[in-house]
Each structure stands twice: as structure tokens, then as C-alpha cells.
Length: 269
Ligand SMILES: C[S@@+](CC[C@H](N)C(=O)[O-])C[C@H]1O[C@@H](n2cnc3c(N)ncnc32)[C@H](O)[C@@H]1O
Image 1 (cartoon, rainbow, N blue to C red):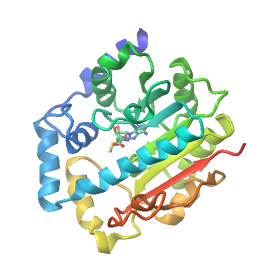
Image 2 (cartoon, protein in one colour; image 1 turned 180 degrees about the horizontal axis):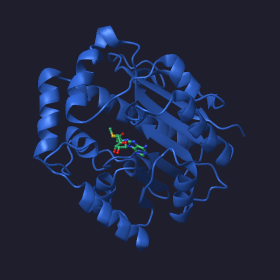
Image 3 (cartoon, rainbow, N blue to C red; image 1 turned 90 degrees about the vertical axis):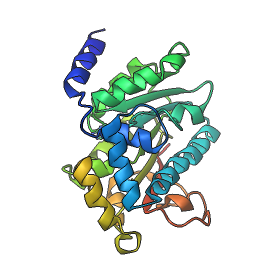
Image 4 (cartoon, protein in one colour; image 1 turned 30 degrees about the vertical axis):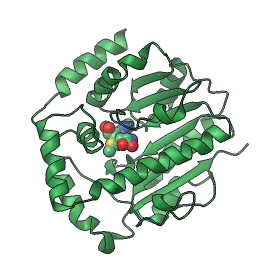
């Protein structure tokens, strides 16, 4: 109850509909309805200058859906979505299905409030929860997951899609320590499904032109290179086909590379 009151107050403080919000703009990009004119204008400007940009984000989302199938095939039924945004269209719980539990986690009270509202219909189902937390605060995230009904003695699939580029001031080594902490805290056989845009194909994919447009409306972005992503997942067992473009997981799709790295890794049994 207290947590809810805190969130409501935080939303009122944070709710500024005249400025684009990352979660709401992403929601608009995916065809959701939880957005305002400023969010739509920011996305429209981005797409006007870089038509087809949304295809890359869509490719990252469909990678997550394929990785979820792998998790389900391994018997996983517990999922934590780190930096979930507003999971309206193509939401994680729509791919995990019945009999699974999904906990959405976001640091932005606006995203959490919209998520709660969009999930109202699914609320009585009790298999979906949303919590306000910073993904870097591993203890809090796991405590909230347990409070939402996850059994942390059993394997959990962590999903972290399109989030780490927004953590511009956190060193890669510090983020690696965060993912190492999840790995050691979670039951053996837990999975990490990670995707993030990268800087390795900059000239070809003109991300160097896109990034300033995004930064102007939404906020600073940091693209990490392959070696940094490898540092992030050190200590995890990387599943085939390894660290690849999202369009090549689990195998080449014939689509143009999206400029997003994808990897699924497991904690050791
Ligand atoms: C581009 S959206 C991605 C949303 C979703 N994961 C998807 O696949 O579309 C990034 C989200 O990450 C959230 N975020 C950024 N930093 C975070 C942090 N430190 N902890 C938790 N969430 C964070 C933002 O608030 C935003 O909602």
C-alpha cells in the first residue's frame, strides 16, 4: 500500500506531458496508446529523418520472443523484464503465456504507472506484476520479484532489451558486476536474454546520425562495442549461436543486420 502511494506521488512529480518520455515514445513507436503529443512528435521527427528506424527496434523485440521460446522449452515459467518500459504491444507476458509469472521492472514512475494501467485487465490473473526499481539495485529487484510471487530457488529468465544504452554514466565494469550479482543470486540454470544497440557498425548504419536526434529529444545514449558486451556477460555460459546481431539469433534470418547485439546466456548448473 505504502509503495503504491509512493509511486502515485512520484508519478505526479514526474508527469510532464510537454516533454517526450522514453517509455512513452517507445510505446508510440510500437503502436501503443500510452503516449502524448510530445512523445509522438519526437518519434515522428526521428522517423522522418531516418525512415525504417523502428525496424531495428522491432527486430530486437522479435529476438526476445524467440529467446522466450527457448526459455519455455527449458521449462522456465518465471520472467523478470528489466527496464520494461510500457509493455503494451508485444508485451513479454503475451509471449510467455499461461502458467508463467512475469515481473516488469522499470526505474521510471511514468512507465510503471502506464504499465499498471495497461495491465488492469490482466490484474486479476495475478501472473503479471510491475515494480518500480533500478535494475542496478539487484537486492531490491530480487526482493520485489519474490514479493510478486517468484520462487527464487527455481530458475528465472531475466530479459533486458534495449535498456543498457540509456545507462550512459555507469561504467561497463560496474554493469558487469550487476549482471554477475544476478548470476550468483539466481538459481542455477537461470537465463539472461540481453539485447542492445552497438557501435560496431556505425558508418554503415548511420547510427552516428540517429544518436544526436534521439539525444536532442529524449536524452543521452551510449553505444557499447562488442568487447564491452563481452565484459557485461563475463562468467555466464553463452548459448549458441553466441553474441550476434539480433537478426542472426538463433540463425541468419536473411534480414539486414539491425545494429543490435543479441545474446542469451545461462548461469551454471
Ligand atoms: C527504450 S525503453 C525499452 C523498453 C522495453 N525493454 C522494450 O523492449 O521495448 C528503455 C526503458 O528502460 C528504462 N530504464 C532506464 N534505465 C533503467 C534502470 N537503471 N533501471 C530500470 N529501468 C531503466 C527506461 O525507463 C525505459 O522505460
